[in-house]
Length: 529
Image (cartoon, rainbow, N blue to C red; front, side, top):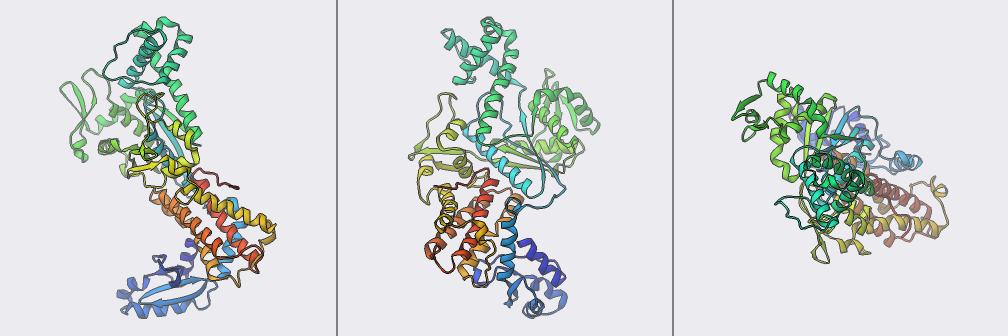
């Protein structure tokens, strides 16, 4: 809607402009300060310019009223224009708010957790954020490929193999075990150990030369758990890329870096000159034992990404990776690529409460709260919604018990109730959408027009949310729209009134906006409650 209105105004005024939404809708649906930007060029006061420009819209069918107010130009949309937008939306509901192909390819990498154990609740935040960004972006016409980078190289893999063997010795063979300071724990390791013994025999547990083989076998089993848990949250990936598989490209990557004079040797280690591009210190990429570091793996991976020639790259990382951004971007520049094409979003920590008390850790996970436990307890819809109610770079704390409330304090209940309530009104009226689709809005009251306008804002909300990578804008909008629906229902008699069919058509577009908005967040709107 906003794009249509903006284009129409720009065509009539023959100039580009900024279009705003006034906080007070009684002033108009949209406003522009374009007269102020033209004042110097035209050598007139903004008030005079605004009056002259407003007069150009006297024959426009799109607007009921266009007026100049203190240099601003306010636009009130006409009933007929709103009706045409509603008709278009309802006649092709599956394409509602969809936009044409943007001809822009985006590679979106998220989750990318170490394959050493099930995902915990902190991983869920980045997973849900990434999936929502992908869903919304695709709806808006962007070509988005989603990717999970499997960190299956380095010391964590050695530790995984050792941890499986230790779990087998203690819990299967009932031996006394001395654990190292760092190791993985949790009941999932016992299950993996049982599978290892079934496949390779129990002697493999005591053969240290087999620990690496056990680790990679266990990694695949852990990835099965991770994929299943993500699937329960309705999250899938287009690609999985193994870090371990990329190291065969290290020599090629290193030669590019050397050619660009970005590496040097000191203390038998190979360093990258990351301070030349804003890093605090230079970083080691090859250890003194000749083994590439974790950073080297990331450099190979980002070369691999850029070699695939996307227009933009988005990484969603945990907040603890903040200090890693500069060195990765430095490496991208040294590889001859444009680091400004890479956008890194940070996902802050999550604090869970239950009845006002900290949520208990999972025995199955060892020392963390499992994502799968929370999904099972409150359902994927509630978990997805609450994780999108705050921008991901801010700390999130919520109480699981709140999500069982059957009132407005539970946002997903409140929004679903608005959607289900509309369906119930249609049932009470014993009418279907086909019965009211041709209704006119000629005599519709201001409350109905305002609800239509708010419902039709979904498109601009989606665009803003995607542009700012801020899905909270969608959850806030849906809650506000649900509140407006409940208020309209409470303040107006619908079934049996003279305006019944007209009101039902108004509620139809509101229902479509809620259903579409929730769907793009990976949530199915409830039909009945």
